[in-house]
Image (cartoon, rainbow, N blue to C red; front, top):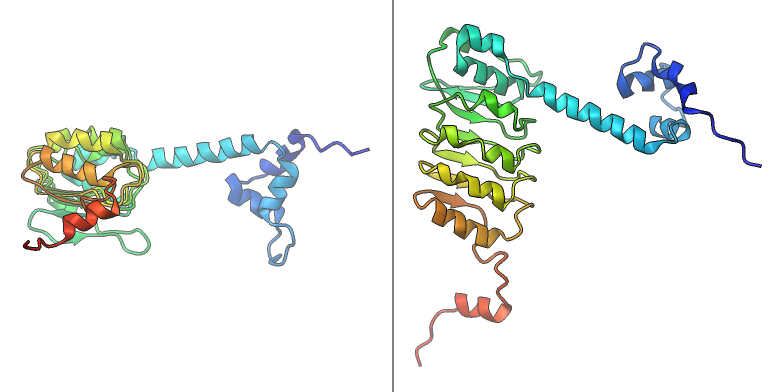
Length: 257
């Protein structure tokens, strides 16, 4: 006869014993100096938390909360120093970089620290933002949409930038000239269609977008939608379904009869 598993509530004393999340739990399980412990933290969880779905939901909630906290606005900075300083502070806290008009790029160091000298010139506008690889999402854009003189915006490889985010960029239509969305996994054709408001764009990078089902055709449509913009992306034949014979005829040089 198989012995019944221990009830889940028996783990509560371990979970709540002065620990914080998974890191704290690992400290409670593995004593200090026990580097050769046979059972890993994942094995421990598998042995005692038989409700795997509940554990996954907990970890997902923790991740969502972390992203939400990273995208909170810094209203106190905006009230005291203005929208440009607040937007710059938000991007720098995300690990990105900003450039004020007539100034050099400001970037955080390896420890995430950065100079606050930009607070001394709150009237100088931000003209370029590089938020590539950051956790910026739909709500985090609130800190950027007030930068009315923003000319360049890089959002490359941002995992939380999606179609809804692109639908919010229209307040930047008068100033934005360069936009990079390369490598964003959640951007599709629907989001790119929202960029028709940005008629002042001169350069747009839509390369490496896995959610776009037909990259070649999408690039052609975007070029028609933004006729004054240089669209970087993919070879126009990619995804058009041309056969080998059609491709060879299209690329072959004409031979006189």
